[in-house]
Length: 156
Image (tube, rainbow, N blue to C red; front, side, top):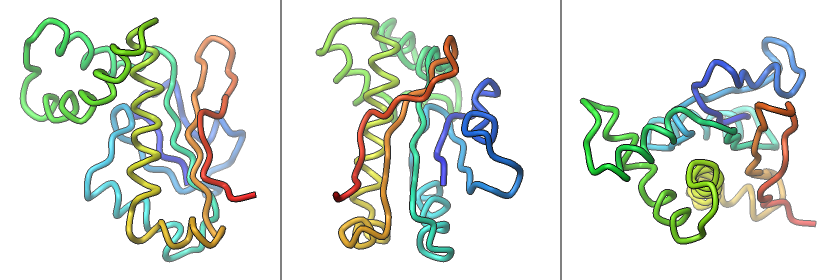
C-alpha cells in the first residue's frame, strides 16, 4: 500500500518499479489523511493482509508549497483547497520551528504526521503491534529519483 501525493511527477508504480495491479495506491494532496482516506488505506491491510504501508512525501510538493504560501501570507485558498492547507498547518508549524528549507521541512513533517495518524488508526495499530503490518514514512527526491526512509514502525 502506498499513500502518496496526487502530483503527476510521483506515480508510485514508477517510483517503486512496479506494474499495474502490484500496489494498492491512495493519492491525496501532500499526502493528507481524513476519514475517507483512512478507510481506503485500511482496506489493503484489513481485507487483503497487505504487510506494508509506505507514506511517500516528495521534493517540491505543490500542495505543500501552496499551503506554506497561504499560511505565510495569511490568505485563504478557495473552496476545499483551504481544507488541505488546514491539514498541513501542524506540519508547517513544526517545520517553521525546526528551520531550514520551509517547504522541504514541511513535506517531511507532513509525511511523518501521516505516518503517526496511520499507526494510531484503530484498525491498523493491532496489526502493527503484532508485526503483521509495517508503516514507513519515505521521501522521494525529484532530482535524484531516490527514495529515502524517514521513519519506520517495523518491530525488529
